[in-house]
Figure 1 (cartoon, helix red, strand yellow):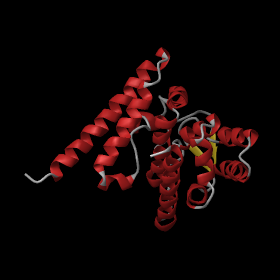
Figure 2 (cartoon, one colour):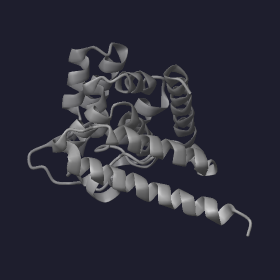
Figure 3 (cartoon, one colour):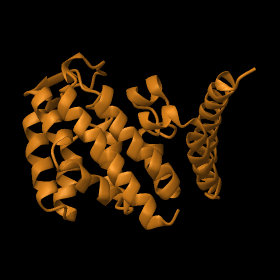
Figure 4 (tube, rainbow, N blue to C red):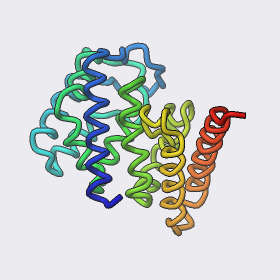
Length: 224
């Protein structure tokens, strides 16, 4: 599969996920587990405004403004309507623009995705983790560089690094999932910088665990 075809398929999958979100409704962010950051308040209106500006014209300045509006970790206090904002962000035609910026290697767009994990859960979080998993394969060095900044967030501590999620469609195609996960391992192994060695190995360990899980799934489906 060539690069253009690979990204076309990815864009199609993202579109399908967004349609599903539009049908199933929003996930209430007010029920998300929070981590205290004294003096900081999650401003949903600010996020919405910055997101719309970035999607309308994804310039460096607009992307930086969106990044600044997103928290570096969970916040205890929040103001605004999370359901409305998240539904707007992920069920319309805007997210594929942000996705394309990230998958093309734009560093700010990639970091925005890491911060999106601090305001999402459920299907929304799965969309973000799917994109970050693709980035681990497409942009392994940048992925590891930014992951170093966010490796101790509440999301990472609870759910692990966003490296092994590949979307629900692969649940019925476990061999395809194995292929993709192995490609991610190969991409991460290509990063030789020793300052990322520890976090790289942690990601690879998580990917191997995901591979083992899918191998067991395949074995259970083989007639005895």
